[in-house]
Amino acid sequence: MSEENKERASITFTELSSGYEFPAASYLLDAALVSRYLEAVEGDGDGFVPPLAIAAYAMKAMMDVISLPSGAIHASQELEFFKLVPVGSEVKCQSRVARKISRSRMKMMVLEMDVRDENGDRVQSGKATVILPP
Amino acid sequence: MSEEIYQGKILSPVVRNITQDKINLYAGASGDFNPIHIDESFAARTPLGGTIAHGMLVLSYVSEIMSQSFGRGWSSGGKLSMRFKAPARPGDTITVTGKVNSLEEREGVPHATCSLDCRNQKGELIVTGEAVVGIARKENTHGSK
Image (cartoon, rainbow over all chains, first blue to last red; front, side):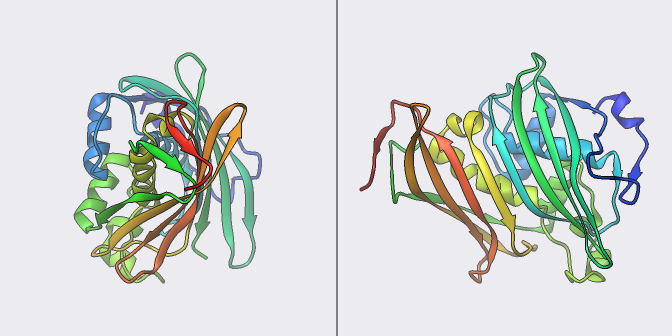
């Protein structure tokens, strides 16, 4: 994660609104990062970044910006992969709040993300639904 | 990668044991330190009653079944849509199963639509959904078998 990304201030769920666009976040998918990921998921490396690793880091980039209450859980996930990403690549993630629901005991968000490589080619897109504790 | 893809084909399952150590390892690798995953005393006080595995960790097993069945075509042209139905907990054995439900041409490329389920050792559904993936032309494909 770049220093620029680390310096962003946290935004609370209350402050977020549908359509909010997160600042773009760039991250380097180097060999050490991918190796740690593969060890954690008991996967084998093939010189390319596992697509779920890219998704996980894109989610982290979003969660670095949002200050969610402890206990928030993942309800659903959609992902689409467009291109292989070699280990050592830097990718840029752009994300937005597609939908926010906040009722008396129901709080949830639908987050959309779009990940591109150094050439600007789309490598992955996704949509995550997160439910927050009441 | 499988030599042959056909409608009705059962994908080779992926089986993984979930432990708190593995959850902690994933937290470190992914940077997701939500206490619902790693803080046992915190998690015990929530409605979930204990720590749970990261949803993205379980989805990595789903991605693995697709990778082992469809190779790099999965990582460069796959589409996944999954719903989390119940938590995966430390001590669970998760089995990911999949089946090719249909084959169809999309823009001249054969695509397989697969149903995918993750269940724990009690048979409880943890994650369910669907994946679509393009199949390389060199694959031997059939409408059914």
